[in-house]
Amino acid sequence: MPRKDLNRFYKHLVAEMHTNDTHFHLVEQVQQSFRFFLDLDFGKHFATDDDLKTIFRVIYDDGKRGGDMFISLCAREEKLGIHIVFPGHITDVSKASVKCSEIFDELKTNVSGYAWNEIIDTKPYRSGLRQLYSFKFVNGKEDVPYVPYCRLWKGGYTPLESCNRVELLETFSIFPPDLEFKPKVVPKKLEVDNVLDAFIRRVYRGWGGSDTVTGVRRVSERKFQAFTNSRFCAVVNGRHRSNHIWFDIERRNTSWRLKARCHNETCDSNDAKEYPVPPSLIKFISSL
Ligand SMILES: [Zn+2]
Image (spheres, rainbow, N blue to C red):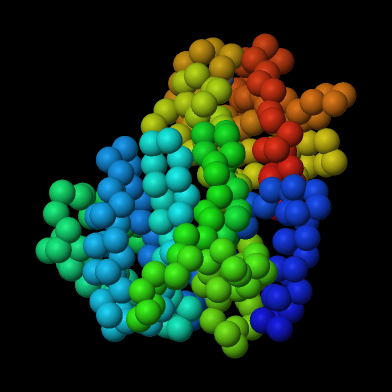
């Protein structure tokens, strides 16, 4: 999608959000150049409001870090996610990683009591950043979205209440102004794999720590298959030596079911237990 159409795209999204309360699951993929951003994940030990102010000031560094910064928050019971976007600062993966480690050093020096190496997440520089207002599946449940918090600039903190959602989507986007998009299929697919993986981890007993979903494909209108590196077979209730199991996700009347399947001839997969799959998850997989 060319940059010039992005505004129109955002308008459609916002209209959908308002009129149909549609939930989106969008990740903006990191391109060759992008706006610099930071992803901070605070776990159970939340940063206090005072600490947050200090943290933001350290990151802002009187504008030397990359000009105005826009902060969005994703607050759940036990976690606080923070996305900071610098719309005026265009970067690339290697420069962003250098800057990120500078920020890490300064936070470590100036704000003690936090495990900064765990809080600063650098994975998004290799994949992308969840879009403002977008939902995400965590352990099969929809997580709350990131919402705008404030702008930090030379005039201090400014709330963003007066901006409309289309403006905010543009401001918080990591895409640089002149970008021609090169759509990549892989990250979106990876996201689907991860989401399914989280769901299976929750329902399928025997799913090991290193077991993962390695791919999902649509077989028909009523059927998907998810491939895995897992050897845990639900029929024998144990691990096979070499067979990897896969899952059929099939529509039965009105509901969708997930069932483990096995290559082993002596295993009759019909005996395997079926698990209901939430419609929201199917909707997400279907977006592939
Ligand atoms: Zn088996």
